[in-house]
Length: 120
Image 1 (cartoon, rainbow, N blue to C red):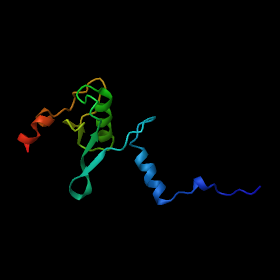
Image 2: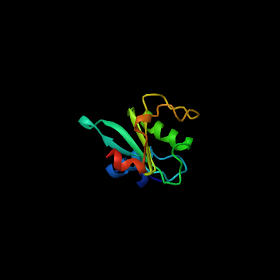
Image 3: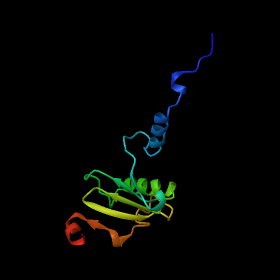
């Protein structure tokens, strides 16, 4: 038998980008990559992780930890966690600790939907 390369072994530029986006996905979940916002010179300054409104973003340790780990691993200094009813900003220069979800929370930026109009 002759050895021929398998079709799946060939990579196109498109499959390469798919592989990159998968690194953001939690194992066994259909979570999408966080939205990344770029700062000056194209280096990201913060990420935004959006959760469905049913998730209590102030209390859900998994959601908070996931958001902070994304930014920490990418050396992005800030992460925003939102369910569109609330926005929470975290300083991700501090190492995320699962059992300390308040670590890095920037209280001055905590914003709830009923305050949107007065803040903007």
